[in-house]
Image 1 (cartoon, each protein chain N blue to C red):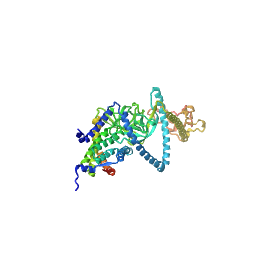
Image 2 (tube, each protein chain N blue to C red):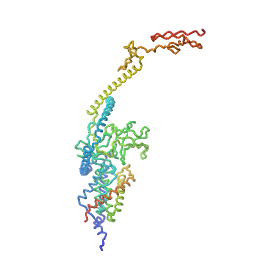
Image 3 (cartoon, each protein chain N blue to C red):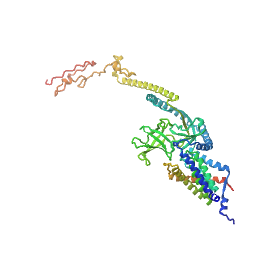
Image 4 (cartoon, rainbow over the protein chains, first blue to last red):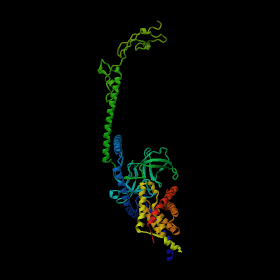
Length: 414
Length: 174
């Protein structure tokens, strides 16, 4: 018996090691937990030991890299800084105007939401964190950040960047946390197609792409459509950008569903800094309310400025017309000149009717001279035209209510 | 003329490593494996822990040591992922065992042999991960792109040669 173990000790050790790991795998997989949930205590403990060993080195490396990069960008590479500053100021001005434009819509939206008793969740507090490492495997899409439970982080908190959602916290250690990216196969999120307003479930794939596989074919879904979080998963607040649809094709594995692939809004392959959402509220945060009020004020100011500019432009146009049409002036009655349009838009002619412009008297009358043609009622079909010798010039100025007397047309058989 | 029996040849070429090297090199490989893809995402194709496992296994020429080294490195690697612990542990245990068994039979100091074993073990690692995920864990949508795995094997083979050369300096003859 002893010789058996001595003789086959190598293979026996291998079998024992494999058996132990298989049992360990079976225990971990047997747990009836949803995918992406934190591990059991012993597994978490083992991960904690390894993470505690590895992350100090990662922090050190990250810190050195950050120091070198900051030294370069803050002290050495300052070319074009003034130009960038000027461009940023212009950008701020443009964004203020945009904010003003959106503020009205936002306020209206809030009023309507209040009327409908609709519960919205706004991000009220976030914790900024640096990405210090990855899992090191392209089969497992997780990253490590330099903040943990000591900073108030908890499992299942959403992680975002200004571009879009990144993932959620999985394992949280005292000074480090593991972020499960949305493109991991065990990850999922409730999403909403922005244009068509179709709700769907987003999943990661082993290849690291984002997929929606629970929708049946719909001609309205087209590449390029934006996808937002729906808020239905209770992890990601509603309305955050997720990505854009890249392709729509039949899913060969799940007929008749479609395979919709997305391009993530956030660059998941090269994350530097992320925000962990630590708190949401159903009312707008104070800072956002102030921004909204500032936007509304700016909108009012802009509207007033636009109105004044329009008024000035109209006044200028009226002046130009007045200058170009001297007949509008009546030297005899300068007070009855056409007044410029008022701000209220009331027609000046309606309140103070001016003189009706009259042409100057003709020096040599002909049949085209105003008043030279007899009324149509006095004309006889087939008769000869009136001779111009009989035409008398009209008076210089006549009242519009009293038409000038016209010479009578000769009788047809005269 | 010196006569070398099988046993004496094996004993002559067995190497050991200082405890610092035994611990520091695998940890460094895992740290680099976790750090490099953050800076250069395409470097996630590398498998530095596998290269280190193969190196220690073929240098020590002990299947038990190879198995345990592979298991330890694989488990450390698993602990940093969100996968169940044991996936890489099992794959690298098998690779450590086979690498050590091959190391007894053939000359692993040769460059051509090193190229071949690294290429073969990289493909074997991919195959074992596929089997464990697909069959043992029952993940139905787990697919491997074999062209990608072939590329991974080629790149790891090229990277392994200079690493083996550097690690040769840490060997301690018994």
